[in-house]
Image: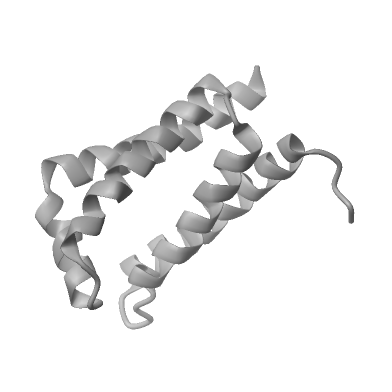
Length: 115
């Protein structure tokens, strides 16, 4: 029961990300363009956020999905690494904390931990 509740809470973050990208894609497109990346990457990111949220809630492919979402959080945290902006740094740190929780979820669902 608690594991499912945790997965639903994690999924909420990815649902919010998907909704934000759907409602205001220009924000993400501008962010991507500012880093020299193609703006169209906002749409696969939206789909990945939505798919990841559904997978977490439904509990399918938990190990690989949680690992992919953890990597996504770590990679996208780069966009928030702005040391002079406390708000952006709190998002940066939050992304790494979420990645940590997702790595634990992944490890618990990929098989025995070799460590």
